[in-house]
Amino acid sequence: MTQAATLYIIATPIGNLEDMTYRAVRILGEVDLIAAEDTRHSLKLLNHFGISKPLTSYFDHNQQLKGERILNALRQGKSVALISDAGTPCVSDPGYQLVRDAVAEQIRVIPLPGSCAAITALSASGLPSDTFTFAGFPPSRQGKRRTFLTGMATLPGTLILYEAPHRLLQTLQDVKELLGERHIIVARELTKIYEEFIRGTVSEVMRSLDPEAIRGEVALLIAPGEQPEPEHESLESVLARLMADPTLSLRDCAREAATITGISRSEAYQEALRLKNNRVSA
Ligand code: SAM
Image (cartoon, rainbow, N blue to C red):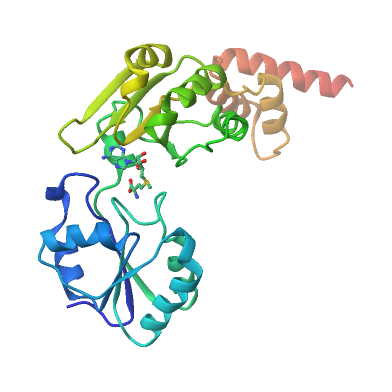
């Protein structure tokens, strides 16, 4: 059973209806109210799974008004599910403000995990997945887009973007100029019949795309750029720092400095002696 006065954030498929979870079907069938980005669109999904529940719209331009009504329903003890057109609500989709306001009122928020294009693309990309940045849609205006991409240039890890198909080539051109010839992946129509992963350098991928025929939904993954080498502290400054600690012997300092800098213990010890003698004679 659903819990009273609870907001359920429910992921729905990004293409393939078989990606709907059992739990999502059950909870959607049990809540008092479903808030959907586009009620007509979501009705198809709900009909497919035999779910018939009161529906209300919640989208970018009515968030303020509808958010208050949804919060009222929650305050009255109703259970409400939020879904978007596809994937996980709040991920480049409406939901953040509603969740923020519900949390502020200590209304229980329960997430139901499921499809998300960014994570689906990353999982099959072959790009580093230990660290990544999801930055949503780049701005559509070129000036703002270039500023946005410049801000991403030195981030560690894989960069994941969403992009409209008709803007993809322009964005790739900007990526090439601002981030360089990185390895990228265009993940298209994930989980659908024409699912495709186009891999290569930015130029290779651009060459393989037919400008007249880029269709469907697209996630863009960009491999990390070269990270600047971390600056190494010099042996002298490591030793000076260690030798300021009166509880450490000269040998202790040399051993620790050797570990930190990768220099041999004997070399570190010679340097420690030299520093000590300099201090004495100064
Ligand atoms: N909330 C969704 C999620 O969890 O992924 C994202 C919604 S956002 C409005 C829609 C964008 O997500 C599309 O323009 C595309 O960039 C990406 N996307 C959604 N479905 C996709 C799919 N099947 N294949 C590739 N990208 C997809």
